[in-house]
Image (cartoon, rainbow, N blue to C red; front, top):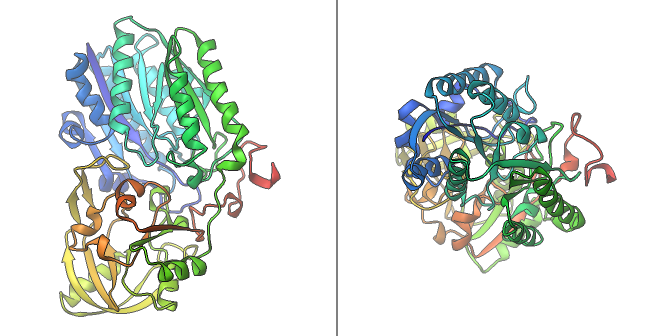
Amino acid sequence: MRIAIGGFMHESNTFAQLPADLNRFREGSLAYGPALVPVWRDAHHEVGGFIAGADRFGYDLVPVAMGLATPSGPVTDEFFEHLTDALGTGLRLAEADGVLVALHGAMVTPRHPDADAEVLRRLRAAVGPDVPIAATLDFHGNISPRMAETANILVGYQTYPHIDQRERGLLAAELLTRAVKGEVRPVSFVAKPPMLINLLGQATDRDPMKAIMAMAREEEKAPRVLSVSVMAGFAYADVPDMGASVIAVADGDRGLAERAAKKIADRMWAVREELNVECPKPAEAVARAIASDRAPVLLVDLGDNIGGGSAGDGTVLLAELLAQKAKGFVVVLHAPRAVVQAKEAGVGGVLDATVGGAADRMHGGPIQLRGTVRSLHDGKWVEAEARHGGRRQNDQGHTAVVDLGEGNTLVLNSLRTPPFSLGQLTSLGIDPKRSRAIVVKAAVAYKAAYAPIAGEIIEVDTPGLTAINPARFEYKRIRRPLYPLNGE
């Protein structure tokens, strides 16, 4: 068997201004042909699972192209055309017996609100109607029924934080090879309950989502049900297919897939109110962190969740920590200009700089700070453990560690980098376990790395592009009614 592999992954926040263009993908990961194999072979990522599947399931690997970028605003149409053309051309030349493709499910371009479905449509056109296609999808994908009409197999992550990506890639590879051999005839169905789920309610270690996942695993035990994927959706994309969904894959029986998917979707709808999670405002949260005797306290900056497409330079919690005279905190900010100033000051030098609020003022305004440059770094590290996103090679760009006094540390980096790995701090000589409080600009994904060392976790209702309350956003293109917006 010749199995072609590739991918095109981006989570697009349509409320964000920063577009995902060629440079954003180069900063993330962009590789063509055989060059993608060493990048992803050892990663805890579905593409790593595709590669491992060659030995496990006995196929010849035909690598085509793989692009991934940190969540931001929509992908530019120009780059979309470039990478889909590379994938399509590669598939036409590959003469493959099957296709494994890693998609996100929440990619948007100005021209294509359902960009992942458009990728699948073009891949189908490249290989013809008879070559099976298996696509892996992020748990936060806004999955459309059109995807199931084009791909034979759709498999989504089932953990949040996403630590099962490699395993889901292996499952997709197994189902695809069985399809190529004629052992199964996989068909997919997508059910979409009329609801969105806030990110905190999506955590798979928290009921009722935990119970829904257990229900899906039981449904997979039924005869001829090959896979069931609960998909929480991505609320920061103003597109018609935004919201939760359930994917079922069955052997030759679309009706069976439909019944399995709708059974889980009905359960999600029944517990919709329990899936909403409320949390404190910044002043209350910081006061609680200062009073806590369970260090380190994690202050989760929900409104500036980098993994959801925000700027990463929000200052709301930093300003509150300073106003309440907190001690022993660590805050990471995206601040390329301040990094340049820190390099000019040198280690041991004094840094006077304005940080934050560069991208917009939705996450707090600029703050003037004075501190001592403790150290300078290239910002690179290797993550050996399974972490959300599956990245092994990490790069937050040139980075400066600044001492603000009172045991307070400010980390300034040049590349927006979600807090998915403790290596972001330990590679800089910072021991997070010795901090009093750490601000993490995330929602749930940080937990795989940070929860084991946390004394207490306080999720904070901060403003911004990834605010936990969907009522903060003006949606124009979503389908309605859609719970819980506008009382619907």
